[in-house]
Image 1 (tube, one colour):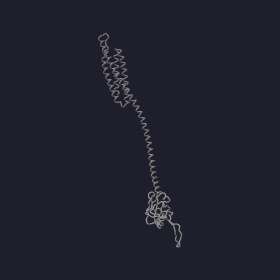
Image 2 (cartoon, rainbow, N blue to C red):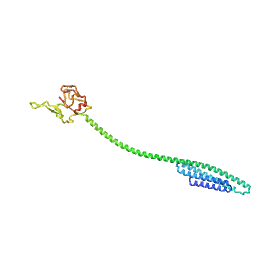
Image 3 (spheres, rainbow, N blue to C red):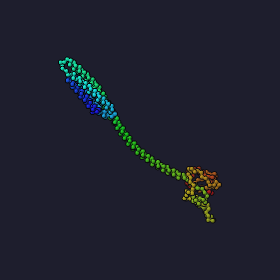
Image 4 (cartoon, rainbow, N blue to C red):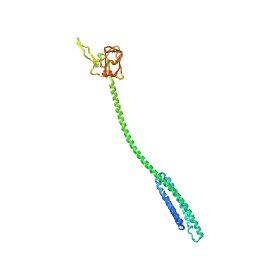
Length: 316
């Protein structure tokens, strides 16, 4: 409510009190009614002032409160106008008591004033009830707003806590991701290492050649024998060299290579290394352990290659 509107209400109250003062000079009942009406108007004014304070604190209902204040100001203006009419009638109340016609006119004027004041009081009571209802509604809205503000405050605190928890969780996820990346890298290295070890463990070497070739390549040596008349050792045995050069062999994986081709199918061969000839399949085996064919097939790779990774086959 603006200061101008408050002043209008105050002026209306003052005019009404003045009218009551005039009528009180001639009629005790009018004075009592005037006092009651003045108190009612003061109460309505106080409640309107309270309504103004609540309207200022409730932004959502500000427009409605302002509209109600404007209406109250218009009502006060109407009261002012009616009071002016009542004040015009007050001159008819003060007449000589010996004049019978004057008494009648004064009584009629007095009755008119009382009737008008009664109507004004009824209207003020109705307005006061409306203001009280609006005041209670705004107070309830203020209470709801306060409760909502409390709930929002609690919610904001919870959201802030959740934000902190999410931040901590993000850090944990980053740490886990870094750890996972490290584990993946380590696993990759370990996998490569295992694969390399697996390949190395299953890597085997073989070579097939004549006696002279094997000796020349350094993969076999002669042992034993005796000297004859021409000072030549006889009965020498061909055995694997103590130090073997992998470059002189053909590399293979014992899991994949089960068949090894022989250079010539019309020649006989024998195993120089310590591998068991019983663990191979060939086209033909001789009683002295030699064999013939286009290739040899390893029947049990684990046992066959278990004694040595280096297979040496000599042409007989």
